Image (cartoon, rainbow, N blue to C red):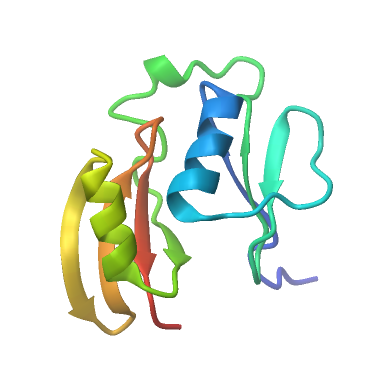
Length: 123
């Protein structure tokens, strides 16, 4: 018996509608045709990405230092620099400025719930 790799990634968020709108309007993600209750799934490849309401017993405001600390979430974009510029102009917190590296142009921002999300533009 073996695990073959990640098959679904979801972030637990404080406000499902606001988080879904952020990822749609700021990152250009498109909703998948079907989502489970209390979640919005996006049509990302190769692994579906979603935002969802917190599981019972999880208080995101009590998570220290912030939700997702210690987890590296990377999303690929077609133009990381242009996305960086759009996010920065909209006041989205940039926590690591764009640099060129083995995965192309790369930068990290914080979403509405404080998750650090890294964007890169090469596979």
